Amino acid sequence: MGRRSCTRGLVLLLVVLPCVCHAQSANRGASAAASFLGFDRNDYPGDAALAALRKTFRYTSYWLNPPPGETANNWAGKRVVLREHGFGFLVLFNGHTDAEIKAAASQGQNAAALGAAEGRAAAAAALREGFPRNVIIFLDQEEGGRLLPEQAAYIFAWIDAVRGAGARAGVYCSGIDVPEGSGTINTALDIVERSSSRDKNSERRLFLWIADDQCPPAPGCTLAAPTMTGASTPPVSDFAIVWQYAQSPMRPEFSARCNARPAVDGNCYAPGSKIFVDLNTASSPDPSEGAR
Image (cartoon, rainbow, N blue to C red; front, side, top):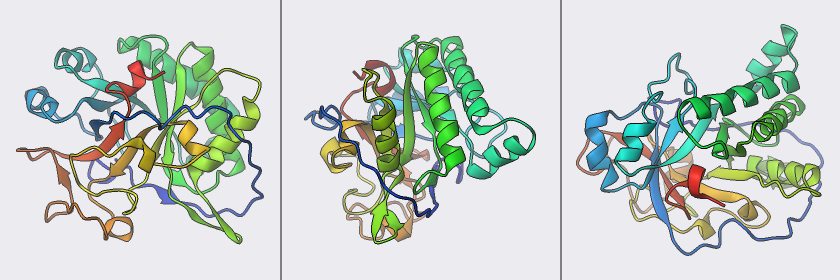
């Protein structure tokens, strides 16, 4: 979403570290047959656009703090009007890049303390916006590849703080493989492995929103929502409840082979509008409030 107020545009960081896998016992994420189409973007599309957007989309992103690259959040206060138009939600909290986490540490706030403070802030912001206490809040993790130590400390402290406040924790992250040693890794898999190790004796579930606009598996700029089965494989599929399958503008390095092409400017547009969007599929029409 950082680019042109829409797409987050994940940055891939290659870090070679040993991989320890932990199996998740229940296949809980991507098996539902139903698929529901949603959109996400940084800028609120405007009240006047909602009726037309709702003809195509079942849910929308909803930022709790300023999105990447922004200093203000124009989604604030819009939950009621969105709900009146029948939208479900993908509730988002903008996290930090690795450089920002390190900068905070240099000022005396370590990564875990920063994550805990912002997890509490995210849960409090969701309540102020009128979301139920147990809403799923997704932390926007922009950088891809295996997490660096300070990134992991920040993310999991944020997760623990969100849960401690009574909300449910999720992460938006890349599902795109990058080279690591003789194999590959992606952020979603790294987070799943770490979460499975930490929560192996707990009933707490971590929810993932996977970003993967590679064609295949992504179908490109189509409004026919694909099923979640294309988003990932176990163990990641046990955690994934949303798949961002197209970004605006589309990224040629990942999407050049897509059958469903974007507009000439590279964006995916809502039908009959000048509103460009990222496209998502989910097994729930209201992923943040309705997913179980």
